[in-house]
Length: 92
Image (cartoon, rainbow, N blue to C red; front, side, top):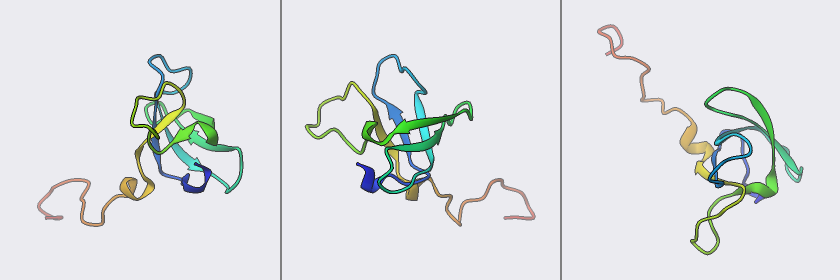
């Protein structure tokens, strides 16, 4: 899956009891490298994830028991320009 790994993507662990973070957000990846830099979105702790463990979907539609499955693509994680962080009379 190394051709579609991009910074900003969020993956969830497929293991019932994860050996690493339950979710990871990719922060840096160089094409054809064996690993990507990531952070745990819950704690902010940095980690390294093997690209071979990152999966877009299950190829057979069955539940995977290893690696990470894509939850949110990089395009979905970018904030929309129309979204506002807060609602106040000055910004409305």
